Image 1 (spheres, rainbow, N blue to C red):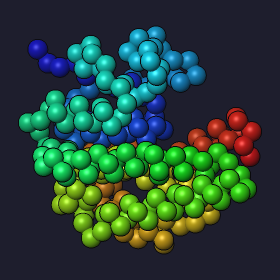
Image 2: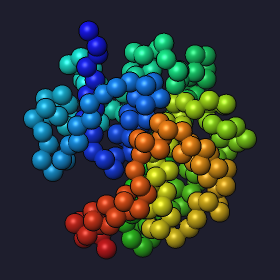
Image 3: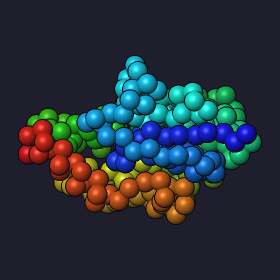
Image 4: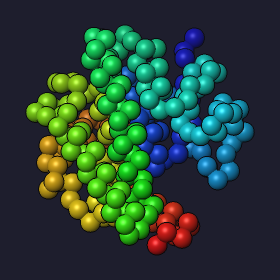
Length: 219
């Protein structure tokens, strides 16, 4: 009997994009269900009663929540396919550290950048640039964060590259000019079918952010 795999998601979510890319990397067929976060489905509330958020991967009726946990689950469940996490315990720990850094430092400061104004926005921009500097230094001269192959850290970060246009526009700076190594990495990732099919148009995301800013009176 074939596995039943369902992904509960919301199109602009970089966290949902992680699951999409990981599933595509493994070649796993799944049913995509778009959620309306203003009117969450009973199924979402049933599958994630604690946080009531997307993404949720439902595998044979069992829910897995939180994007990085989902990616790890996908890697371990379909271990016979291309690996996402390193086998070496130390390298595996480093990969998890940098994925956590993306969430706690880069995503957090990027969110503050478009949600604030004035001095708060400048502080967010400073924090975001510092986070990008550290990520670029970690990447170094490697094609991908894990080395020659696309893997866990790449999957953790690459969805946010589709938010870079929003960050640049809101912060009035150029990631391509200030972070050429990361920009080159982004282009390499976009050449992968699993990435190009799993992510969204940066302009569409920027328009979505503009709608949110109007909704919450940020402009």
